[in-house]
Length: 300
Ligand SMILES: [Cu+2]
Image 1: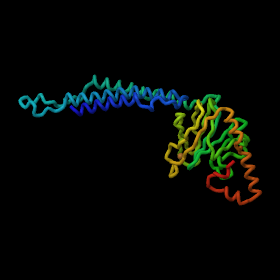
Image 2: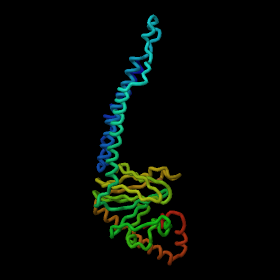
Image 3: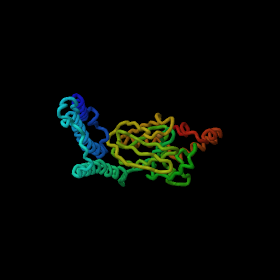
Image 4: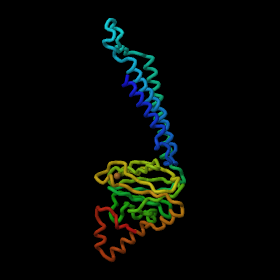
């Protein structure tokens, strides 16, 4: 009997925890309500199934527990499992119920995924570059277009691997060793590249997460809907420094965003500064060539 009671208490406790948890109605991810709705639907399907299975288990434990020794005169009254290998009606109900349940779990996700990767025209592009173990960011500059890039061109003189004679890339704004800034209420198409291994760009508060695959440009879009400072995490185990692959995204009002952006260096300015340095002291160029990350070289 007490086992059945414990099972019922587990069911009740789960339900109460779900309803009264302080983490349930947080304000985060206001721009991705559809994702939260999908989670709600998942709870509505799995929650009753979970409760029903637990209650059914408790019922069976109580109702069909062994009564050996109680009625030795009539042992057939002791419960034994019935062998019932073919039950068309039960199989039919289980098949239909499971199919509807699984479809209900999967279909909303497909709709949400579709909107996550269907980029609206007004979205501006920015690029996030992941590498062991830091983040870099690139903005399109005055022409609104990101220049083309090639991973084989990446070195200390060209940390994003931009194709040098692509005019679209000259005014691209390169940000390394600083936060990612986004403009409030501006839809943004986040293009993701990796220089070395799999990484994953993840901002929990945005409900935004996407793998970064060497050789591919993956993307998603979102609209930041409140100002603030949020953590960027790498969500793909990418080596011994994975735990430290953290960043910060700052959502600014337009004026603050424009002010910040105007302080950043374009690719052309970055290369001009490098050339000046090499004239002053050729050893600087020696130091920047090679596989080490461009940190420091690009400090403003
Ligand atoms: Cu990583």
